[in-house]
Image 1 (cartoon, helix red, strand yellow):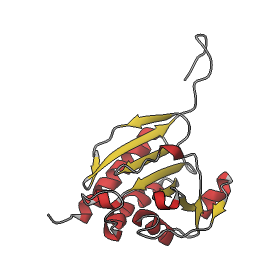
Image 2: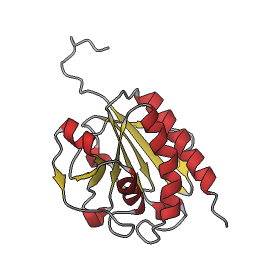
Image 3: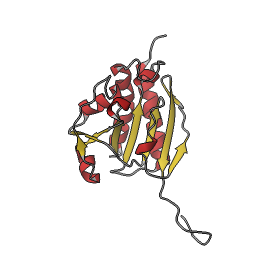
Length: 182
């Protein structure tokens, strides 16, 4: 079965725009993406990393985020302890301390390597608190979201052959029965 990279890019673009709209992200917010290029192509996570698949997904996501001036945080794989690749300006804005590592397709993941090679001034950071996120292929992004994550269902629910799980975050509700919320 031949891979349609244009379709993968279109699915990623559609999903990103839908999540941006639903989450109501604003300029300077952070959008975390974990992407298994192996899963996108129908393989097993971590077993068949593909720069081509990562490129197709990245081309769908990154321009949509830049249009809204939202930062992309690309999650690395477990071989780099799920470090995140962000623009240096994002790390500075949020006070995230950089660590020393450069992701590679089989040590960090193809999507994170693509982000590193695209960003003007990439930085690797250990922790973030993203405002919304997209998990493509079971990459487990939850640790990088703000405390109250709310699941979001989108169509498409797959990118390529990888399952797609998304979340937005919201502030905590504080108070009791007399509290009023917007």
